[in-house]
Image (cartoon, rainbow, N blue to C red):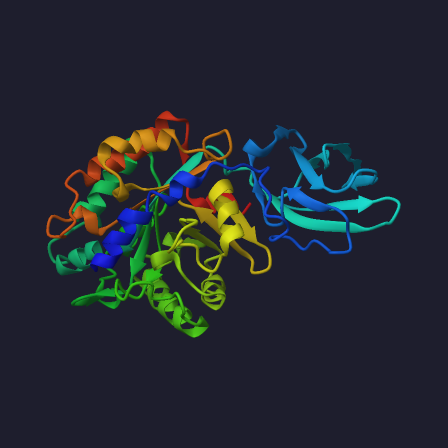
Length: 392
């Protein structure tokens, strides 16, 4: 792995995460929603594409009761989904009930009949969950293929064996993002003799596309639709062959998290309708095609859907290999979305740091993973794949 990659992870991997201190009340000044310039009012919170959960209101028998905040001049007669909005200090507010997964919120001004609407989502199963996601995976698969005549189980591979131990201890659900190839090996060489075992463990394992290979850096930053689609299908076809559809998901993390809109459309059209990233505010944001205000919103909210493209973006809470073991728990203790801990905690680590032959080997790799997962359990988070929490 190139030095630029290691330097980037060290310099940006943690710094961007420290910026996540916002809440639903943070506006993107109309950037994320279709606000008509003819209307004198603007959605402040929520905004188009927001994905709300228990932390954003009060769960009642009928749904999620949440507050809508609108900016506008005094003297307007506004209603939100038929509920009259009160006015104070330049803002209108109304409490409404969201009863469905997908919800339209419409603001109407009585005297002029001007109106605006946004679409938001209520995630019933999102709050209080976590997963463990692993990037840059290929070496463990090469090892299993190299030892196919010896290994009776995929878990005889030490790396995969570690994560089975984590699962057995904490019930953790683990998501592996895969390369297609590395030096001397590609996924077409992985035997299908273990397919039954993969399926037997589909309750806690997921496999998805990450990239064609490790190098070059940022391989999809300027790539078009066809390039991303081709590489994605290479990996997906092999996952189906050697593991089965049961191991696949609608969620992935693209290598380096940089892509064009066309590249993300290719991922979406391949079935990956949710993408995880860092959404840093500085250089190299690991934010796909999203711009500054969108990244800022995601950094604060942790999740948002681009309704134009039909793609959900979810912020990774911690890249475990970027900080020392003794900082893992204090860092996680400091995570905030507004005044609360994040609703969903997405923990991530890269494969390479597991191996003694890797130049940036971390001998406490397993301890870091266990420390992160233990923190999640002790703070009331339950294991759940991201896909189980955001699509219904």
